[in-house]
Amino acid sequence: DTGVSQNPRHKITKRGQNVTFRCDPISEHNRLYWYRQTLGQGPEFLTYFQNEAQLEKSRLLSDRFSAERPKGSFSTLEIQRTEQGDSAMYLCASSHQEGSYTFGSGTRLTVV
Amino acid sequence: AQTVTQSQPEMSVQEAETVTLSCTYDTSESDYYLFWYKQPPSRQMILVIRQEAYKQQNATENRFSVNFQKAAKSFSLKISDSQLGDAAMYFCGGTGGTSYGKLTFGQGTILTVHP
Image (cartoon, rainbow over all chains, first blue to last red; front, side):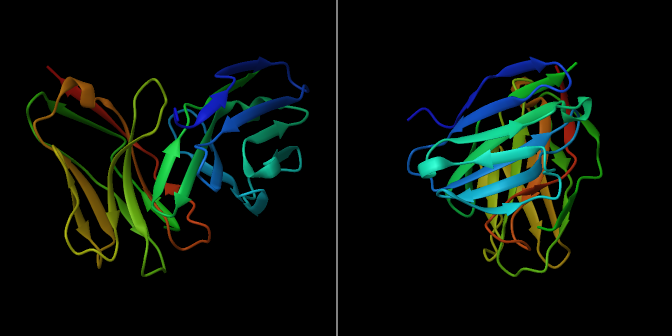
């Protein structure tokens, strides 16, 4: 197992386009988290999955954002009608219990 | 943690010296975890050290140790014998106060190590 994998590493998109990111967690981890990190700031929680169930969503997650985790394995985060303010690093983390988290390398989104 | 505050935007240290990074937090929970993560320019969040709130003893990991003051809700990181490779952004984070073990992070401290 090579840890948490995120793809793509970088994404440049035009304003108004839709983008989708993927996170492959560590296989035995049933918890999966998405965070957003803007330059010079700490990561901010977006959403949480336990297996395939999305159990918590931040108010940061507007209706243009949607996340899924079909079958409790990989997860996708989609942003529709991207805006320049969506430019950020999107981090995924997985865990099998509270207190132990593994982060991916993130997907850096630039909206032009 | 419901909120985490790092009051030092930047810190610097000479190689081989010791530096302490500060962190305070707020939570209504009695059981939670506190963390220090390192984020180098490669952007991968790397766990430096973890503290379980119910443990009185301060966590240590080689050159890294914490001063955990539960009553004061303070959680500082001490880096001894600083190395050039320690240069990075350091984030303090914690669980508790919310459900599902999600982490709340502080704003970060940029650590510069001078040779």
